[in-house]
Length: 322
Ligand SMILES: [Mn+2]
Image 1 (cartoon, rainbow, N blue to C red):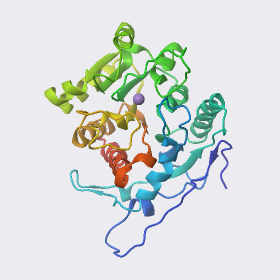
Image 2: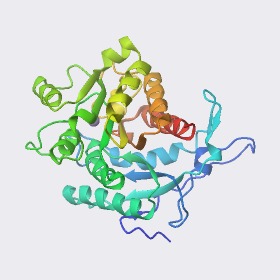
Image 3: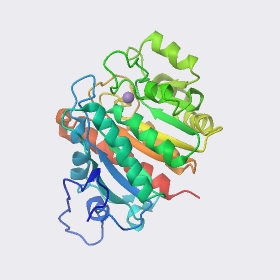
């Protein structure tokens, strides 16, 4: 029986048809949390996308990921790591209000607070939802940490829009965190920013608040490893923990057709996988979310499938910490 009032059990609990006892599918390993078992890594769905500026079915992402967990194995050949030896559970979804978006954000923060009170050592693996969910998620994370939080945001967009124009939305989470003094700009690093997807005024706002920015072109030219090392150094300098947020619209449109705001010449899947592995492996990283996937526009589930690989590759880094 689930004892946390603001989360509901996973809507879909999928198991794969096992034809071969010699391999484990993610769906058969990442099972539903029973509400009591002590765990240190947990998948949490945050099904909210009415806060998206453009039309988005991102609220369907947690279930879309669960569905594809039946299609992938737990073994990563690049690092020779099998996740099936580690305990990760699906906690279910944060409850949303049907129409009251402020209430939805309040539920995200309060629901995560409830989870962290019950499971103080939990590493949250949060699946949005659109990017608006990152603001309440990081507020709860900062309370859990009880100190200064750094952020590495992998995104085509800066997400520092003024809250005066219909916010909070998926264009405002970083602005919301700055204005609420949850995170300082000097502790925020944005990676993968894209031309013709941001404005000069918001760039000046971000830079004036001390945010460090790396564009998608810099990633292509300088290499993701070098940039991630700098990002981790900056986000970790003077902070107690780093929160990682991945907006899937950072990827090139050919890799991620199922995002509401897709871009050409975005990052490659390999750049993103290498980035999240490096982040997962760093001891200072203590929280993760992945957002802004629209399963309704996703051709052959390509974007959801990539997101599954991003999540699992991050986990491979996490369990490989020395
Ligand atoms: Mn974003």
